Length: 116
Image (cartoon, rainbow, N blue to C red; front, top):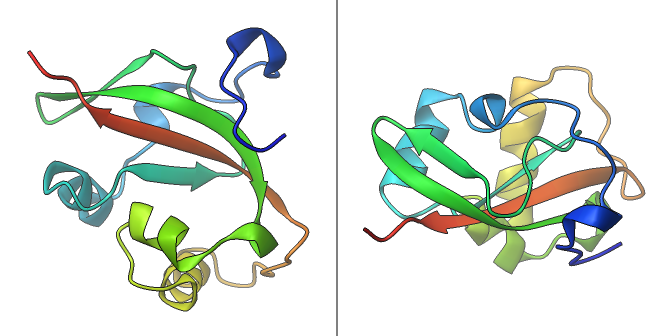
């Protein structure tokens, strides 16, 4: 399912776009242009949906499934981290006791600022 962005091929959303990015540190990374994607255990947005963060709008460009084992340092940079290991340690600090399993699948939401 990597790199799918056709809404009709995606399962129903499990949450709303308002819950996609909520941590203050992540919001700051997005606003600074250092975070252009977020990975969640469910699907929170459709392609074309608009996310509003502190009055700044971002459009979701891609939504697709990815396994944790597929993550590269380039993916970690999308998340605002230098390496996969940095990203992994951050996620595990937010979710104590959560295993990091290479086969575990997450939903990737890639976005960009809306140019007005």
